[in-house]
Image (cartoon, rainbow, N blue to C red):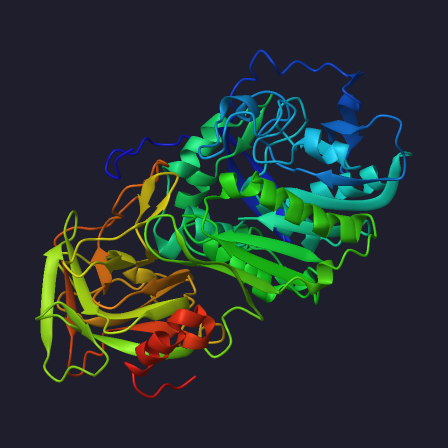
Length: 579
């Protein structure tokens, strides 16, 4: 869907919810009709040694009834359970109509819920799999919630129901990617007594900033598509309409930000470097949860092929075996952080390199200053002032710097720009930090065969106000609390957060910063933004305009042994560093 061809989302009705003590009118839309596979048919069958209980009724704390499917090994008791929570449909709807590119046919069985664990694998290894239809989904009663603490409370009730079943050992975990990962964060923050561990695979923690209004720019394409696929008997929360009614961070959106400091259980987090939704939030979740037992693996793959790969399954089973079965298998010796360091295409420079924390130890930050006249980046401040303009709707500008030595950049980047809007009072800025070869040709990473734009950032300039308490020199955090429109001729500084990434540059290759009013190249997912771009965007640099990219340079000892000396020399390219 093109950014300028966005269909309107009409709210069918509304309901009033008490959210954090405040009554808020929540817009609703009709759920998609349940397809032919969605009939309510409670019953039990046994196939290939797996007991399959269909449409088991579970009552939530407010009296709402939801329905879940339960898969468990036949004849087994004292079983740990894994919940896959989402409104995607446990048998019908999204669960059967979606496809997961990058996952070879036959990788998972027909019992598998979309983006969830495969009962054929997990039951064989002594686990029960719980596939619920969340509130409002399928034949479950109520209205479908679009994330938030309410969904966390619902799943917390299911956790306690599962733990009370006669076949259960009282230990419950959660698994799945995307929505099924986000729901884990919200559920764990509710601290249900029998939730023993979670494994969120590519799941954001801030619904406003990662999904609906990243950088303050409303996204209505992908979010609208997902909403249109959710099936149920009634309604779902129309978050696209709510995005228009609530354009700033307020009580409605605060309730859709995970209370990470309340998560205290063992947690295994996975984050894909190329994920357009979840990278930032997954790593933020790992960093900010209160648990002392937490692990992060940042991988090169898109979420689906990584989640269903044999290596990932076996790795995840070691985690669950340790905490849900109590098997002392040495999982605690797993490095706290493992990262894939990217090169070109979809190949690794290093795979699962062990680290102690993220951001990495001994990260040294360096400013690379923009020269708007020459379209370059340089480690030294630029004395002369210059400016460059591009058409706001379809133009772009880029700045390059070649490397003399092999250099690794891993972590968070920040782009400081001094900007001006001509013939407009606002600007939507899309940023990508990329690799180019010696000839200047873009060298993308790839995911699912598509070129990835690079390490990404996004900001609506009227949302530029920083949260001074949460921001750091490398990680600016904007408040999203008010609008600061531009006046004619006004030049203002903006700090744009660049999502975390990890990549190697070789001698002759270029670091490139691309700034535009749109995202390029396009993704296979139908992202579409309600943009405010018109006229021209102007970037000022040099002299009193300290426009620069802050980059995280990693010590060369973290590269392969043969590349270590070169990498140390590459780090010295930047001179003396300060933490």
